[in-house]
Image (cartoon, rainbow, N blue to C red; front, side, top):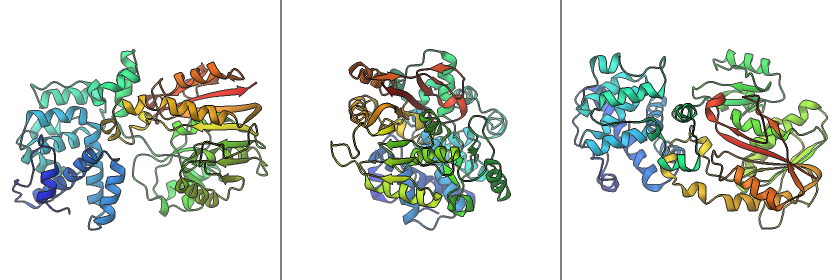
Length: 463
């Protein structure tokens, strides 16, 4: 287990949370609980102080500290990410309490999320000085059978009276300014979804979906199908060792959020199309586009060129395409202002633009507290510039698709409207929302609609 904080770590931590090295642990569960608490404490403040993604901080920590077993890693990781999910409430505890604040936060978080390490949670509660025992903990605490964020808010208001907690506080105040939702029920649904862990979504490729699900179930992966897309597989919420799955190693299973998969279906590539994925990253959507082509014909003559300003993701895409046995995907780094591909050459161009990623806060709850409103406000100029440049590669009659994983109209509708105002040779096309069935010209996928990440997509046609 992790060691206690050393003096340099203590000195670098914020003053509103007291160091926990003074706590005396007597029983074995208390000692383990204290060690976990110390490790989580250090990681939490590294994320907040360095303003770096928690995923990166945790991965580096476990890479260096190999002493942790699988249970240790689970307790540390899940507790850390849960703290960020509920930080909008928990930060009030740091203001109201002193030496026991950290343990109150850990106990409240574990209670809200119904974590299974009960002896650890009990020890944290004992260290906190708060009464988490008896009915408060065992009966009144939120449970997996009652996951409503409103009930969790009621429990917090009871447990930590006279402090007051509100569901809107679980996201930063600036979020509602740039992602306005007037309907109260939708607003609560948004908070509910952003406060819960999403499932692991995947796609079957080069294999029948039912066959893939059957093989996954055989190795105790709780895979199920999806009502919306025939090749989508829900892998549940449990962590999975992908490299231990033969389907994954053979390129027959790709991890891709259901919301992200919507974008490929809106692109709707034909089997012989030539597409350019302008900001491909590691190529999840490039692989999906090629898979959609091959589903129409195993001898599809279509192809995709994937570009990115970073070489490493393109190298990862090349590995993934090789693993899947996909021919017809090539990479072309975008190194300068000049297009890396010919003008007016493509049947379709996908611009999955860099954005604030507010739609992925379910998977990255730390980012809502690391980023400020400028994460949204700084993006539209860059997004419009990329869209404008990329549009030059669309041939007459071709398709231009603009997408983000942002929930803000500043990065979405306003960028598309600004583009169309200056580019009269493109026309916006209507789409059917795959989850609601509604016709719309600009499609926003909200996380609460189908247990997904949030996404935006608009499809345009060159006249």
